[in-house]
Length: 298
Image: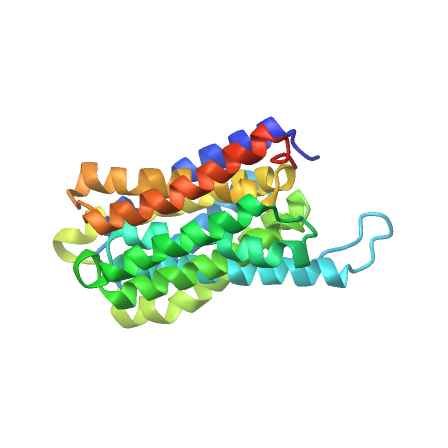
């Protein structure tokens, strides 16, 4: 059953709020980033399976005749691969640059939605969409200009790549049914766990004085930061446009640095803040303009 637009928006809002805790929780875990991503996804997968009371479906079947839906199955795997890439790249970026840079560069995803959404989804762009692209690009330039002070350039580049994978994930999630989106999230957690397994054995589990904080951080990451949001996003994505979903998700980069500042004392640089304001301001402005003109709806 598809949710109403209002319920879908609410699901995405709560999803983004939970996602936003990632920056501070990742900083709690003193471990290899690939091992963190893999363990977080294992816990997230268990959480999703328990809450939905089912295992993931590896093949999509037509609801009318029960036959294998090859196109739907392909979309599920593409969405799963893109989200797995996003999770891994984000964790790695978080260890190499500031939390603010990592999350805000991940949210350059509207560029890719605007560029490829019309081709894949048939959702037409407007002039305000293209103005938004220009603003997001400007924000990215501000981030990279401060790369040596606000965070290492390698971390910024990896974070920007996570924006690419997140953009395509949003597009293909939009093409799926609610159940298909849930399956894509579960499969993405399996992929991420398999990628992280070798690093878990290579680096071993956290030990010594950091074992408690790391263990708590991993549990919170798996259950609340990635597990429950997977269900919320799958519920909400089917009831709003891809770009609108991206806009609502901007709550995550808005709140992520706030939690890190409050709990870790990590202060974003001036250029980072400026770039973030430009990116978020352009996207918010686009949404307000389109809603005023009555074209921001699904």
